[in-house]
Image 1 (cartoon, one colour):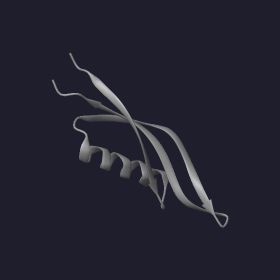
Image 2 (cartoon, rainbow, N blue to C red):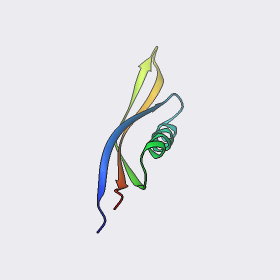
Image 3 (spheres, rainbow, N blue to C red):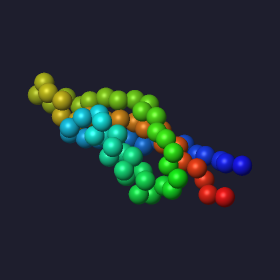
Image 4 (cartoon, one colour):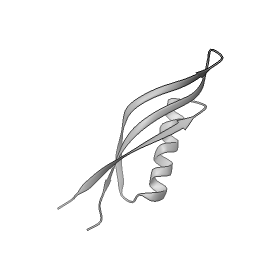
Length: 67
């Protein structure tokens, strides 16, 4: 029987939402084993002086627990 767990994390990038997702997944896989998927639950930006300064994504990362 396979059992999975979902954990939430937030990742940021000064470049794009895609880059923030990549950074979040990359960091998650440094700590978590058996990462299988991620869901972008929310995305938003920080604005400074009328321009986007930071892209932020909140991810729900699914990983399979060891037997």
